[in-house]
Image (cartoon, rainbow, N blue to C red; front, side):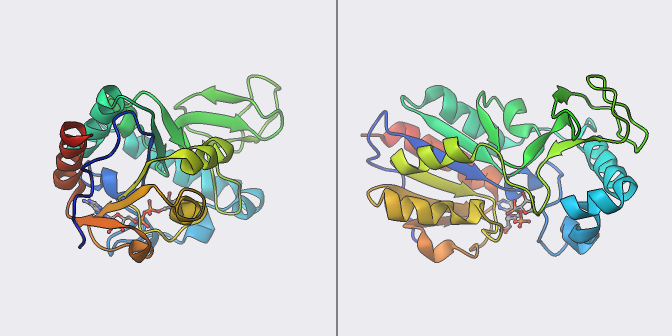
Length: 249
Ligand code: APR
């Protein structure tokens, strides 16, 4: 753990890019994917979260997605101190804070973040594969669901990015990484690209930027970061944000 003056001395008004993963929502009651008790230890990702599977077996994929979306809506899934800390950072930092998440839950928004780039899509949205329309909807989706815009049957899917598909916001994210003064990775195992490669983009194209990993344990890419802080997100993220806001030069 390298905890030097990781947050001190960042120029006030500098650009910060924050990437979050499932670990930031774990203490809110949402399973991660690759921890011992993670989602992929219970279901096979190839069966429920790939575009190929949706074309072959829409019902299985839609049933899984309906179940997960319902779980997110349950009343006891609330933002935790880490989500609130990032909402505070976006409000109080006198510069740009680009918040990129791999998560499809809406806990960053519920924690006060106003601009969140959900690169793997997000709950609460459905997309028609026939006409491309994306609509707000929490309704369960079925193979007989009908698109309200074009009338197609069985073409509605959750607006989330499955394996084998291109993540969203990649141009904006890459531009932010190339101009950032600080890149912070929180709660991600660093195993899924392109998110796992963001640290490489910063090191190559913005070598002056500070890079910090905040996680429960070292991620696959931990050695690429200039600084690392380990512990539960609800402890280390609020403390990090407090230090950043109080010590910016
Ligand atoms: N606080 C901080 N970090 C935590 C906590 C916690 N309380 N609990 C777990 N973590 C860390 C784990 O140590 C792990 O490194 O969060 C990370 C979660 O890793 P993954 O389960 O792989 O989740 P993530 O990195 O977000 O996965 C990326 O993979 O399956 C796809 O689309 C899915 O967006 C997801 C992507």
